[in-house]
Image (cartoon, rainbow over all chains, first blue to last red; front, side, top):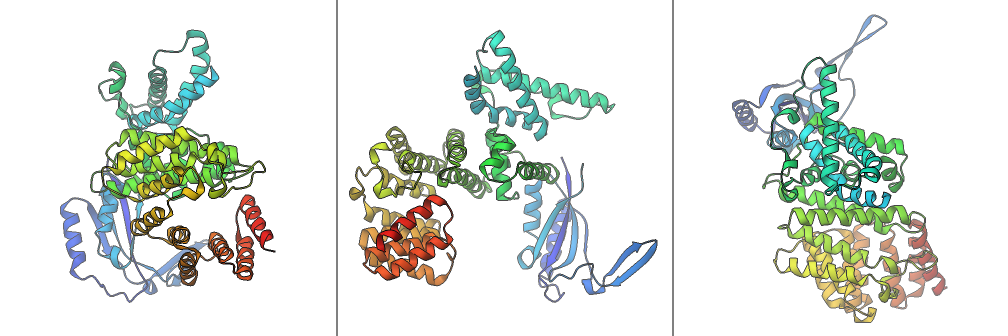
Length: 110
Length: 407
């Protein structure tokens, strides 16, 4: 069985510079080569986000994130694993697990 | 017949559910079909007689039921669903009974996976492995049945969607995962043991279930010392149960308990298990705690308790499993071995670092030590503080009695 998981890479509200440097490149290379990582990227900080809502047919825009939190999503990866234990191992080896945290969520299934 | 079935149920439920989960991957289906099999036994056995191997009969019945359900679903879906059951594998029921695989170990490791909350692990273990009903688990943990049902559904959804594996963890994960399993079993035991008047019957059942699970684990993991340590610990504590409450339902402190009322065969069993496992010289927190319980259990009178030995064992325990509650217990042992002043120094250090704020046994212990040192007024203040935060009625009455003696 193969299960797809979304890995949300969360930073601890510090400046958005990458504190881990080349570590992430090594992690990405390894997980790509193992056929585990399907896709992923860093994203810009929430203050550059645009929040979109449609109410009564009208598109409402907000400059900024939908919720103010100290912690912010710094990036994401889509991974494919045999089970949660493998996903945990993959997430635990992501450098940001040591500096921030990684939220692992399986894709929706009935 | 009902009694026989109840005994078979306790023995076989977890095994049947585990086997069905392994072969179908469907927890709800496994439980429903196991339930069905017992319902059928209740109808059939009085008529046909009890089968030679009740467990095998029940497993076969439950499995056939599961196969029927899966086939029907497949037909309804208009296609053959791929189920592990349809792949040819040697039929375990053709083999000797000893060769029937026991899947309960996989089940308990899955139920106690650290990605599940502790509440969820406890509930799942009781439901899937021990076979308690949702209503029974809800009563034991004093939550509405609906809440417990939701907790179980959520946990099973997480296992399925997140693909928490159904297996005994590989060697590199085993130590920490086994610790998580033992923690759940010990928590169950304590939930049943610490409870007092009112809920005694329901909650006492939790201790019995924990011991039963401990025996299953010891049989399935004979090489893990801590599994035997935990079983010995639970047996030695459980042996004291008959003397723990007086006629009025009040807690009787260890030193005042009627030791002839202790369950001595159980003590013997606990001591024998502990002796065997200690000889392997791979100490762990449960073995050390069992060794402490053994010191108490082997003292025929309270005055004969080997407090210096207990105090040493607590020293070892604080290294293996450091924590403020262990340190508080060590303080009590040190007070008995070296005098109340030595114990009080440790308790005061604990009070100063603040980790046990709100824990009634901290002021209660302080109060007892101050009383023994003759510092009456300080003792009264400490008893009052303990009374203001104590949890159960029996403990409240005990503290009130001590306070009354000082006034």
